[in-house]
Structures are given as C-alpha cells and as structure tokens.
Length: 534
Image (tube, rainbow, N blue to C red; front, side, top):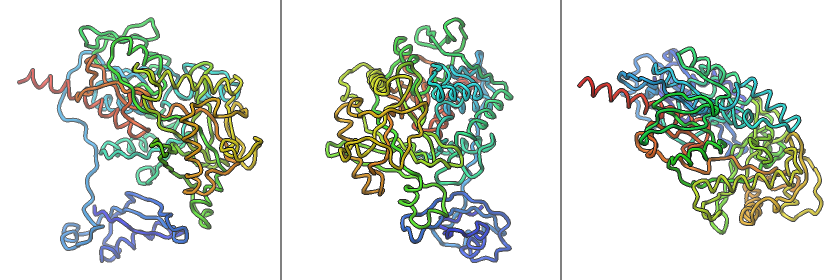
C-alpha cells in the first residue's frame, strides 16, 4: 500500500472524505483507490481557532509501483510491512517455562510462548478478573483489603484498574503486535491508529480474559492464587520455583514479570542473592479538576465537539528536580490502590467513555537514591512504605485518604472546603496537610511547580482543585539486573521482565518487554538444538 501523511480534516467532517483528499494528493481519480485504512489519527489543538485532525492514510491503488515511481512528495511513500514474525527455528524444551505474574509483561510473555508451542505455566498471586473485580469493589466500598487480590495483584496486573492507556515513547516493531493482539481479544479497533489510544477499565477486563483463554487454548496454563514464594537455584542456575510455600514446580526458565508492588517477592529475591540495584522513581499525589474546565482550557469554544481533553505537564525546579503529570485520566476517578495492610496508595482510572465529572492525574516529583541516604538495594521500597504508612495515619485508618485543596496547600486559603471539585476516591476522604506526609524537598517542589503548571494550563493550580495522597506506585524503586540474553547474571534461567523489574513504564512497553523475554527463551533452546544437530 501507499502511505500518505499529513492529511488534515476539519472538525465535524466525515472520515469518508479522506479518500478524496488522498486521491487529490496522489493526482489520480478516486476510482483508482481500491482500498484504504487509517494508520494514524491525531488532534492538532495548538491553535484553538483552527483545531483539526491530522491523518496518516494507507491506500491501495491500481498500478502502485508506477505511481510511486513518478511521485516526488515527502509525505507519500510505500507503506512498510509491520507484520510481526515469530523467531525462526525449532526448539526442544524438557521442562515447561514458568511465567511469574499475569500483568501486561507476563501476559504477553505467556501468549508468545504459547504461540511458539512452549506451553507456559503462569503463576498469578491474585485472582481471575471476575473474582478480582468483586474483591476490589468490596475494598472500595468497605475498606476491607484483600492483600493478595486487589488493584495491584490479579489477572491483568495494575493496568486492569487504570485508564488502559496504550501510549508509549518506545519505537519498537513489537508495539504493533501488542495492539493487534489486544484488538483480536476485543479491544476497540481504533487503538491501532489513535495517537493516544486507550481501552478503559470496563472493556479491559474482557480483553485480558480473552487473552488468557487464547493462551490456554494453545496449551498454556494459568494458575490463580498461586504466589511464587521461593526460587530454587543450583550452582547459580534455576531448577524450580515454590508456589504458596507448599508446592515445588520444576523448571529451567522463569520469566519474572512481577509488578512494581510485589514487595515481598523483591525481598525474597534479594535474600536469594539475585542481583538488583536502586532505581530512581517518583511519588506525589493525584490532583482532580472539573473535566469541563480542562476541556475549555485545551480546546476553547470547540470543546463541545471533541472528546474529553487530556494534558501532560512538566516542570524542572530551581534545584533541578523534575515534577510532572503522569497517567492522566480524563473523566476518571481516583481509586484506592493499596496492597499492604495499614499502608495507603492511590491511583487513577477511567472507563472507555471517560464520562466522569472530574479529570485526574498523578502529580509526581522525582526521587533519587541519594534522597533516602541508604545503599540497600531495596531502600526505595522501604521509603515508599514509610510514606504510605504516614498517608494511612493521616487519613485516620480504614483506607480513608488524606486530601487537601491546592489553595490550602499553596497557602492561598486558610479554610479547607469543597468548591467545584468533589473527590472521587472511595471509601472516603479526610482533610489533611500534605506537609505532614511528605518530606520537605517534595512539598517544596510541588509548591514551586503548581503555579508554573497553571501558567501552562490555565486552571491547573485553581484553589478548588483537590490533591489526594499518596501516589507511590508509579514505577518500580528497584531494577533487577539482566544480561544481553535477558537472564539474571546471578540466576541463569531467570528473566527479569517488565515494569516491576525496572524495564518498562506502561502497558505497551511492559508487554513488549514480555515479548522479548519469550523470544530469549525460544532462541536459547533453538540455538542449543542447532548446536546438537551441527
């Protein structure tokens, strides 16, 4: 097909008119276009009086080669083939590979292993998506936490209870494979071309269930409420893994796709001597605004014609510390995301329609190893726990979240009261002072950044905006080291993978890392088989 970039379409114009624009750019009659599809769609809102969509279109035409040979336009070229191909070769494996964790990294590692014919066994400490949904709803309603089946642990990982955002900065051909598998599992087809694709929590549940059924249909196995409690090594090589403290499973290959909240597993791996190091991360709050104000700030008078607006803001303090928004959820909700008793963490979530009253985003401050002055590889994890304990106490227990208005936090208003933002967090909220939870460097960074961000996005630092603490699970505080082969240097056959291991930062990048891990396993055994044949 031929790829045409930079096709502009005014708001309200039907996408069917794109084919005529494509024909005009190719200087051919429209009848010569036999097929067309959208490859990329983005919104250009830089000038509020000229907001429009920009498309990249792939078209099939008669006499394609002759047409490409005579056209000399930068925005027209042959469309590259982005079809993902499984690694070549054959492999023989004596023990089935094990995948620990069934979030995006583990899910796609298992899917690829199954497609390669290696019949993986997945160990997921949480429940399937249906029992997990019930446990999470009970937690949000009553404050009754299940430490093994919650927003962090269970089928689909933490991403299942989020916005299901699929944006990524990585440029890897495997990204297309991830999106195509999600669509095959029931995700909306527009994620293949939308510049800011998202699925939504309500749809994502069915998608992850379908991927699990595909894995099992290919000979894989997914075990829920199956926690990896011990790793067995012999002379630095993986030979088995313990499940729930009472069952051993023999294996030579473990894809370790644990999430960033698997703190007890981090401790177990450290105790086993698995090489790991501290890693920078970020913590902060969730900040909520009325969605209609964000729409007006981003789109102006055209806001009624457009989907709920998002934003992405960054700021560097005078001291050189980064502050930024993350995981912005239009029309979403702030959710209780704790996984440990008496420790409080929050996250953000949207459903596919993004039709809630509030917009929310994480407002995060960079944290570096020198901030907690401890060389232990897990020092960042311990530091996160301290913040979550303080947040739990500030809320008064029962997973009631501490909140503060931006006006109060910035010292503009003396009284804390609700204005045009009502918090969406359940099971409940309580007024608090963020300075009682966070260290001074963090509150100072937030106080400096908020007005600056308000100058970029009018209304961001409004007095009535509500901050909810503590957003502490944005990324892993540790990196589990791995070699070029994907294996741990201290545990051959162990493949640290995805966000929890410190190698990804979102659904797509974690899924891509899971695919790479599966490729490593396959190629190792394919090479061994080839050596035996030679």
